[in-house]
Amino acid sequence: MTTSRRFVGRVALVTGAASGIGRATAALLAREGARIAVVDRDAGGAAETTRLVREADGVAAPFTCDVARSAEVDAAVAAIAAALGPIDVLVNVAGIGDTAGLDGVAGVSDECWNAVLAVNLSGPFYLSRAVLPAMVARGKGAIVNVSSLAGRSKSAMGGYAYSSSKAGLLGLTRHLAFDYGPQGVRVNAICPGGVDTPMLRAAGVAAARSEHEQAARAARVAAYQFFMPLKRVSRPEEQAAAIAFLASDDASYVNGVSLDVNGGLFMA
Ligand SMILES: NC(=O)c1ccc[n+]([C@@H]2O[C@H](COP(=O)([O-])OP(=O)(O)OC[C@H]3O[C@@H](n4cnc5c(N)ncnc54)[C@H](O)[C@@H]3O)[C@@H](O)[C@H]2O)c1
Image 1: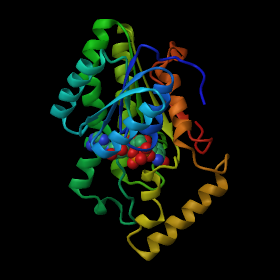
Image 2: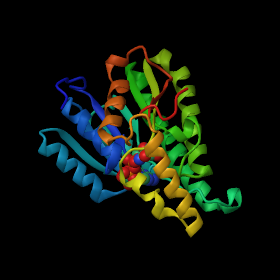
Image 3: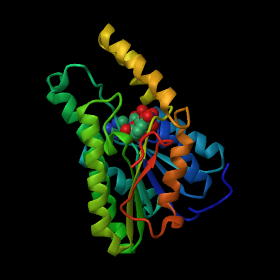
Image 4: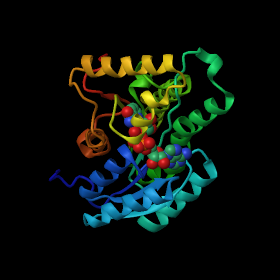
């Protein structure tokens, strides 16, 4: 349990906050004093995160929004600023996975490719575009994007669209950091390895589409547990801690980084 209060008086918009890493991030930033905009397309999950934050004496409000739709993003950002005040911190957590098959690119439909890119890459772009004018006008702000080990290397269980979207997100992070650093806005990314959330569970052995693939996935999971330096996947709270660091003034000279939070599984 943190005892620091780095976000008192600040507003933080967290996407994907209905579940997993996003929910843990909303909870942590709220404990540290931020007023939280709980943004997700899952209205029920967003309401539950809001309830949990308020139960812990935090301030939060839910906003239902599909981050892949720019008009919804623009409307949500305007509503958040009106309800909670100017946005100091944007955390782009919302994301979806795809499933790597054993049949290469032939197994990737246009629909899957476009859907994953729309949520994982266009979403953070739309959110950044929507919040940046007000951050620039105030001369301050912090954006943290949740990429993945898949963006630094390649996805273990996900497919082409997931790896590409997460690598693209690191490019977006660096370009924004270069352009907006001079205007007081820092932009960074974290790259989690395996995190124990509904997404990871959905991408496991059960996602296999054939017996052969199931065996390959099971072997891979076993190998990961064996070779992983810390011998376990991460808890969402451990990712939230890295996000909070990058979003806070503790990271006042950190800009444009891709921070690996993977227990040493991939080192570069
Ligand atoms: N779990 C892992 O092992 C892992 C590893 C590396 C990176 N990540 C990344 O971390 C982020 C969070 O993942 P998680 O594991 O917490 O997953 P999760 O499935 O628990 O949570 C993802 C949240 O994003 C929301 N979401 C999905 N599409 C959306 C959309 N179009 N608009 C608004 N909200 C949307 C979902 O409703 C859900 O609440 C994702 O970007 C994911 O790619 C996860």
